[in-house]
View 1 (cartoon, one colour):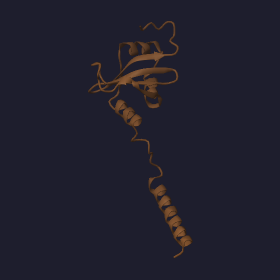
View 2 (tube, one colour):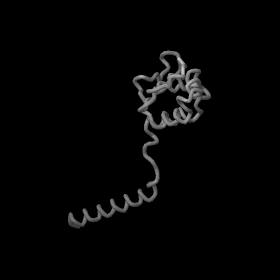
View 3 (spheres, helix red, strand yellow):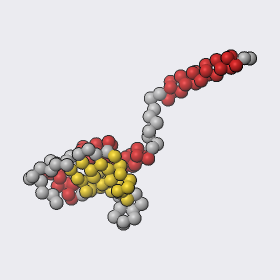
View 4 (cartoon, one colour):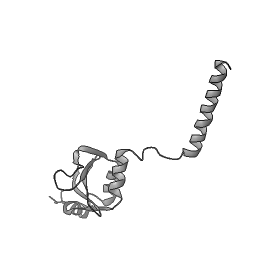
Length: 129
């Protein structure tokens, strides 16, 4: 068997294997096992609850629960500003930042509490500090 025949058979096998893999696994996402996706899933599962200041911002209309959920899904997780090992004793939290807002998501036993919500612009009638 010559080198070109071996190369031809190898390429055909590679092509058939690739097509079979795409057929069986084409609709699956490969990013679900990455650390950011695992943290987002872990934070979003128990349900979100706001602390006192976050609830005040919600009553003012400055932020909604949908905004906080979209921040959780699309924001950047800042591990350097997070306390993922509960070294401060305030609870294990993750700092997530978006383009116009940022917040800390604190893990508790049954819920995820949202605290320290920071917005770019807060309306003047909203006095939640």
